[in-house]
Image 1 (cartoon, rainbow, N blue to C red):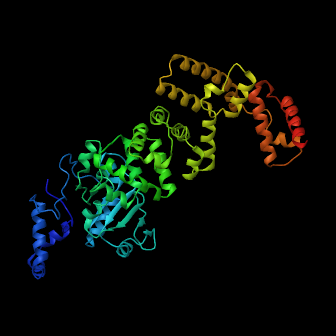
Image 2: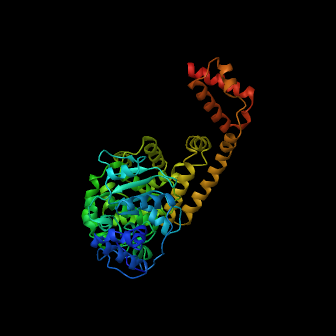
Length: 457
């Protein structure tokens, strides 16, 4: 396969003009440099190699997939930009998706054209900032980000400022892969490596440190030694990143398929101590043994820390803070719930029914990781059986409609629609969950009037 680089060279239509009749060639004769480039491009079409524009820009050879088929709308956008003499390539997540044979989304075209030229070409494009540094183009393939080059050195210069080599890939309009930094080889080796010097990439955006850990958690990559050293050296820079961005990466990390590996790296490089102090040493292993539930994994990770303070610093929504705090308040569940105390146990089940399966899973993972032995496993198994028995009527009641509906409740209470009706129905639902036999109009009417009396007293 011939070498490839940027600028992409004349289009096939221009080469056809070079082969046109004599009167057309006479016009081109006045431009010897242009004509020389056309002849050079014609030789390329016959398979003759040419020198790439820089020493690193070559088509990927190790696992070259051959030309890929771009979505027609994306290929058309690249062709329209290229026809005006501007370099244009598909970059970003869509390149990886196309290489893996998966449906592509999040299309991004990096181009040498500026925002003004792009708006002239695509009047329907929407500028996303006042400087027109990013435009959004609606298309049949979905939204396409049009991003003018930021570094003024062609596509190679743009890819040189990407975070990791596995992301420093581009496709030209013909679907040919540009891989100047060995991203495909790193992906094949499950290796995570920064483009150029890791310290420079992290200085450009410190969130890339947490993104590296997230990629380890998501797809099980192994960080290069240089990347790990840079993480350790620059870990304090993460405090300069907005909390919402940090929170998003942490959520993706915790829900990753290899979350235990990600958390182990987070601790190893020192980032964990910057984000949350006093995390338990076995937290990574316990999180890895849990189902991918965000609140449950947050609770497992933050056991032993000042959890509310950490979550508020990350600006987690209040309901999530309350849910995680409640989970840790009831952990370990086998030390709090005692099935032999029937009334207290039933009350706990009614109040915390939604949390009990997660609490049991958390304690089960803790027992397994710590190797607590058969007695602890048997005690938890007995508690699980008791919880299942206690939850069965609640689940049945949830599936069984109440014998009184909202209209009947309003008639009994003598009120119109409003919050009071909702509170009354919730009260009746709890009553039926505790005693399914009372789910008949007469019993529910009696309970409703008693509840109304207590509300008014």
